[in-house]
Amino acid sequence: MISKLKSSTIYGIESFVVEVEVDLSNGLPCLDIVGLPDTAVRESKERVRAAIKNQGFEFPIKRITVNLAPADIKKEGPQFDLPIAIGILAANKKVKEDSISSYLVVGELSLDGFVRPVNGILPMAIKAKEEGLKGIILPFENKREAEVIKGIEIIPVNTLKDAIDFLNGELKIENKIEETNENIPVYDVDFSEVKGQEGVKRAIEIAAAGHHNLLMIGPPGTGKTMIARRVPTVLPELTQEESLELTKIYSISGLLPRNSSLIRKRPFRAPHHSITPVGMIGGGRVPKPGEVTLCHYGVLFLDEIPEFDREVLELLRQPMEDGCVSIVRNNAKIIFPSKFMLIAAMNPCPCGYYLDPFHECSCNPGKIQKYLGKIKGPLLDRIDLQIEVASVKFSDFEDTKTTDSFTIRKRVENARYIQIERYKNHGILYNSELSGALINKFCSIGKTEKLLLKEAFEKLKLSARALNRILKVSRTIADLEGEERISERHIAEALQYRNLEKYYGL
Image (tube, rainbow, N blue to C red; front, side, top):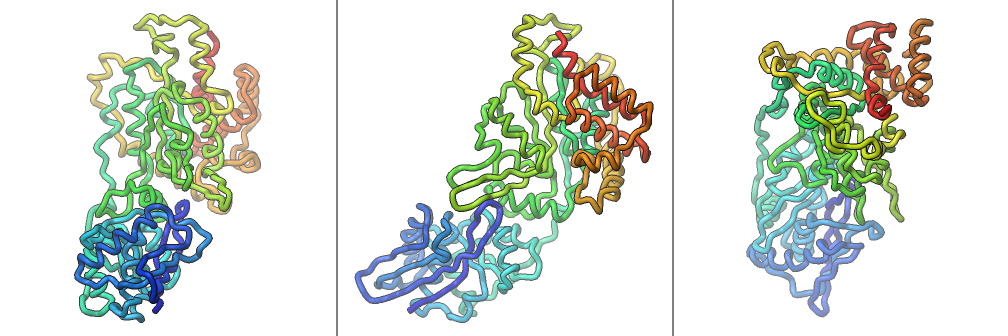
């Protein structure tokens, strides 16, 4: 007696279908699971045995073999509990055989037969639709996550018995989609709360408009972290496609809140400086997304960037340049998306008060150079804007005319719309993504602009990459002003955002 039904597992950020085959035969009573199961899958036989008995069904006293096909791919996770239990009961003629082939089945079982939520439901629901299945049977707590996929039935169940009764036509499950306001992202912070620092706000606006990376340098207490946490509030809202991709990442990582659907807010990730390379980039025995993927379409904030391990910072170079992370294993290559804005902050020296007019620095030149030297040139070349954050004056707190996030976001959206229209036939979205050939095409400058750029190149000893990034920032400044041509003042302003050089010139 053999039964077959479909389940799913995750590898990388994608789902693939696993066929669960159950065979009941005469022989010594036992339950064997084959098909490269991990520990969680192998342990499911005890959960399944107890759940079937405690839900009032008879567990067959036979030799039971469960095969998870294809057999050459590692299966992990507890989501196979429910399909294995249903497969055993179907092979024992307790479930209508023709009903189980139309659904993808996932869910973890407790010993009393209740169905617990699992990670990765969204990509599984997408896969069920792509495979042309009628629907997906899943834990009740995961239903909101799967409801964003239209065109398939979403069957949420609380217990194993509910699933069996539904498949036998004895229970009708209606999935009523609840209306929510999740389409409107609401932030509890705003740039209007930042007093003074208008120059920094301008730099943030340019960075957000062109999707540029930014480094803030200044003494403690000047508001660097406060400003960074408000960057997502000035970024355009996520598109439906971006929101879906981001939700998939958080779903498989187990970070999506239960009973929630699509992520609508751009992520803001601020890992501690003790983070490991795997924690930042992703990986592990079974590769999982790291911080650079969890902040996809959002902001990665590195506070006190010189305190991060050098290897971690060096590993950032590839995702910053390519917008993805490639992790190679013996049997596969996994690509995690990682299009993020890097916002970094640092003190100008170990004590934090070098060049501060209000405090005396206690560091000698050697200590300062060693501290600044932790940020290597190749990484700095990939940071388009470097801005000094000065101490706030008391008069700044009395100024009530501070720029709010809504005003900044509108200007950012207008600039990004210009870029989307300009690059719609070139496979990119932002000025920061311009390649060498596209820079020549879209960042052409006149004679006076070239003279200014030449003088800056020689005086600041810029690299070719840094020169290109100055042109990209100039292009963004021009877009914010609605101008097609890059002028001398746009380049002059872009050159002002190369502030780290003055700290090296001790």
